[in-house]
Image 1 (cartoon, rainbow, N blue to C red):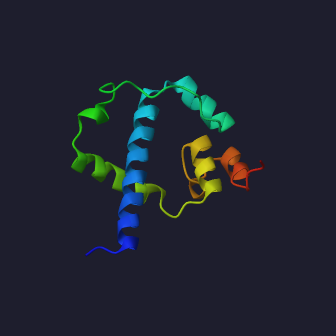
Image 2 (image 1 turned 135 degrees about the vertical axis):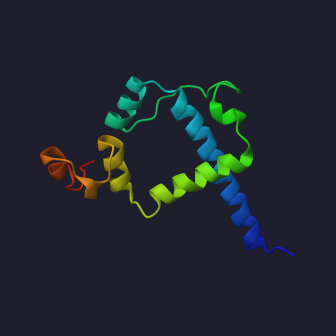
Length: 111
């Protein structure tokens, strides 16, 4: 019999998975201007979710969606908020600085 802790963990994992699917569907539906605005302002737009069936993810089976989610989780594992913000602004991780502007930007970000 499953313990309460294991049940809670399973539910939390399912919630994180569902949130990821919703997030991916919304990101797929954005245009470049919207993505640049989010990257520069770090503010999410108040746009509605795409209609059901509008995303290629809607046609995928759960097994493949979970594989994609796990890959995504591994990609960002161990990253802190500052690293994620840097990645959103520059398109690469701080340790992969590509030039003088990135070396200067690798300093902690001011908020």
